[in-house]
Image (tube, rainbow, N blue to C red; front, side):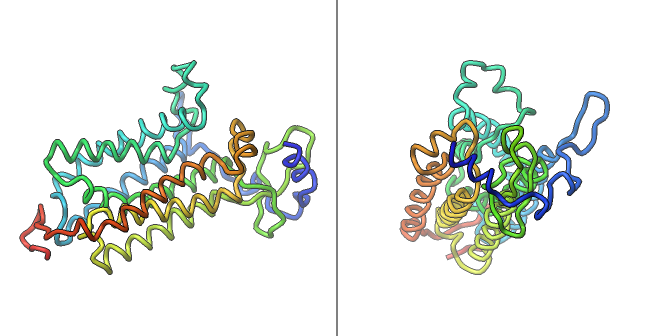
Length: 298
């Protein structure tokens, strides 16, 4: 904590950098009566809808693991997994004190979602969906993995609009002075816009990597290859950006004691699991008979 305050106190004066308050962004889109639409909510909706649209394009290719009609049901399972897994993951990984106050867990509008929890929830949803429809869950997971970067991109942009999850103090020219990041009375330091770093790496770059693997290689015919690529790509991107990001306030002591943020520790099993899936994918290569269409893929 002492090091943190010292860094904040010696940071470049805010006059040298863009002030977040001057950008004109606000967490709320509009308010009508008691109803308020927030950009964070729109980010979830946009990620799901755009991901759904892209999934349909992937399923139209030869060797798809399910038919177009399956996609509608899958979106329901995946959405449920994102919400339940993301919220429960946040409680377990970042705010375990909520367990003592169960009603707080239901207050989704107060924020608090874990991507790692969402991954677990979505994966369980895919497994359940595949079992109910007698489909191959790992191949379906490969297709869904290609769509996830859309949600990550919109979600990180929403984090930026909310002025949350900001980075560490910095003197780089593109640093941004966010509000209420230090105790009252201290000068607000310029910080890394780590939300935008994550949007670029976890959203844009990861999407391009997966798109190339899907459209330009035969990775989709090796069950687990694309899922593994996603896990490794996301894990490395998130692990790297965390070095430029402030840890969650309630986990600052944990980060100082272990040397890594909670998000980085959670990425370690993702990277290892993804690497294993990629390494073993060729062994799972089989002749694929498509669920939709007539073309057989060797």
